[in-house]
Image 1 (tube, rainbow, N blue to C red):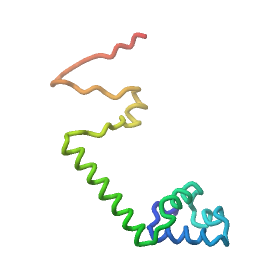
Image 2: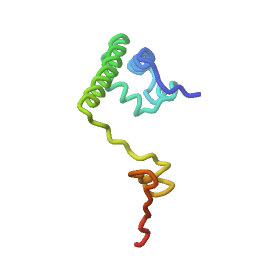
Image 3: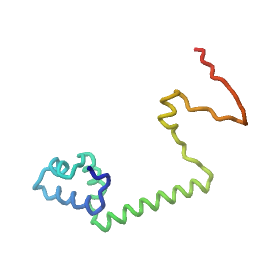
Image 4: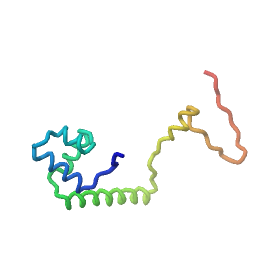
Length: 111
């Protein structure tokens, strides 16, 4: 089964392996079951980092995400969410919510 996430240590080792130049980048990607796009994205992000620096970078990204989320909540803002695909796919529209108990309405189907 293909692994979903690579650790920072694995990412840095893959980049160092490709950096030596003995094996073409395409072969390195094939060997580790990653796409070339993923490889180049990793290289852009982790190219000059050591393993410990890469770990620290990921920790800082998590902290910043939590900080932004807390600020949004504190200000009373909500992230806009897309309606689920199932609801949109089945009926074409997201279902309306009732305003009060036994609230009934109809859809106008005339074109």
